[in-house]
Length: 143
Image 1 (cartoon, helix red, strand yellow):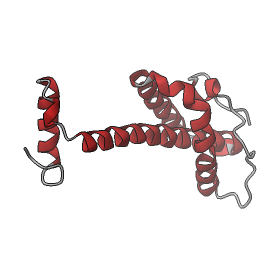
Image 2 (image 1 turned 135 degrees about the horizontal axis):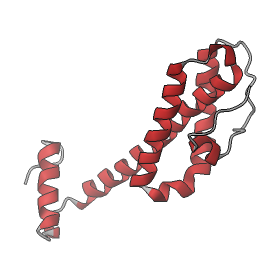
Image 3 (image 1 turned 180 degrees about the horizontal axis):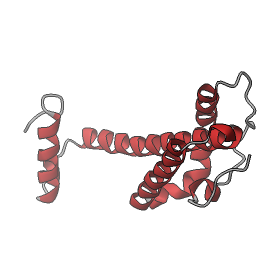
Image 4 (image 1 turned 30 degrees about the horizontal axis):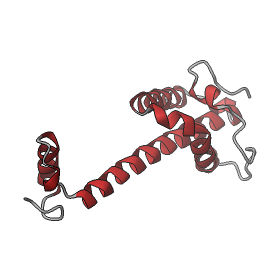
């Protein structure tokens, strides 16, 4: 058996083969658990990151209407599509969206502030948009 540290890809192949064959005695259980935990954390980080990017663009859209452009619209649409795919693949993440939104909003607001060049944040302390609005293709914030 290949060690986890020596050749990660080969280790994955061997762990997969052992699982398929029902050879649980051949599993590196500790590392399998670590990898599953890591996968879960990656999905959450990706969802929070995509929410942050989406929120930044929604805030820019709302607070700088004179600078609205097709690339902002494209980014908003792409982030919504990618979030929909994430939630389709892992529907249980949907119930945690309020928590993820709370974590994503400060990052999105900071990014929007950096990108707008505004000297002082006009953004509220917490997100003024609801989850349904954020994910809806029909929603763009008013000026």
